[in-house]
Image (tube, rainbow, N blue to C red; front, top):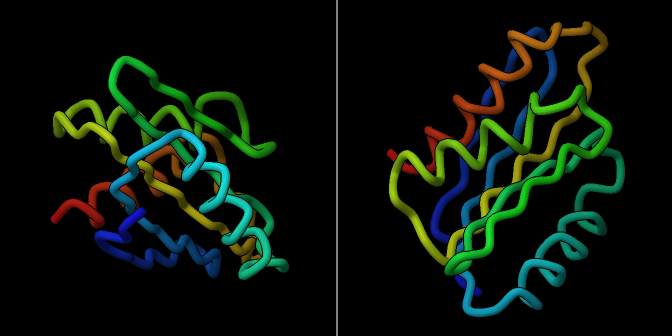
Amino acid sequence: MKKISESLVIEKKSKFYGFMYKIDSLEEVEEIINSLKVEHKKAKHICYAYKFGNIERKYEDKEPSNSAGLPILEIINHNNLDNTLIVVVRYFGGTLLGKGLLTRTYSKTARNLIK
């Protein structure tokens, strides 16, 4: 497992921390997620997506359906990345963003990791 990049996007006081990893196995995904859960205990959501060979997965962590994991996975696929995990850790800032803005912010955070 190798962290490639990090990013931070702030939207209406919510903080979205992005992390991109190159992964060598599916077991690494679980290790990384568990590590981030310990490191970011006060985060409201830890959403992610990964592509490892022919396997693609996304996880929304109680965000509205397809507003977090799906946009992250779309960024991975759009950039033809493989063996890649992108995780976005959200700290809620007190203002509901709505599904549209939420989706755009998760996408933006993932895109910033690739720049």
